[in-house]
Image: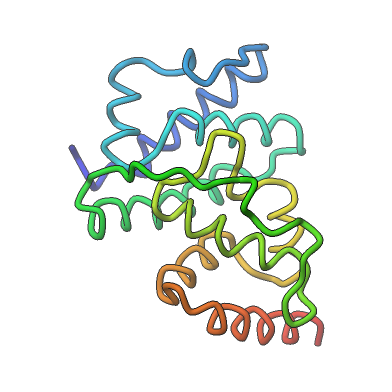
Amino acid sequence: MNHYNFSEQFRKIHDKAVSLYAKGRREAGTFFSADELAFLAANGITAQHMYDYAEDYNNYDGQPGCDIALGIELVRRDYFLNVQQGKPSQIVLDVDAMPAKTDAVAGIEWLPRLMPKARAKLRGELPASLMYGCAGDRRFFTTHDILPHEFLSLVWRAGDNDKMIVDWVAARSKAAKQ
């Protein structure tokens, strides 16, 4: 694997997915060649992740966009290669056990749901039915002036320390409103 060219290769695959979705293709498993799937897997990324970015890009006026997707996947890739030693997790987040979308902590709606979702993204444990960086996540991030990959990195640093995450988000949110 050529690590230095990761971003360039990612952009090509992202753009291909966006184009295929725009042309009406709707099955994540049909988007990529064996070599592209191998590249994605070697970097802790699934075809479903790329499909989700393409779907939202086409349905939400170019959001989240390649730059945001790349930022997210760079953090995920770093965790995958350096913490997981390139070995995918066998665990899948139980969607039914997640907090509701309307749950709040410290007056911050969506954050209780986003924390386990971000941890699952970081570890490669999101089910196909969930996207880290979906429209709801993006609304949260823009409201609180947080980049999605910045939050993912925060979650990595915080580990299981929810208070650290809540305090950081509350401080960022307060600064965003000033």
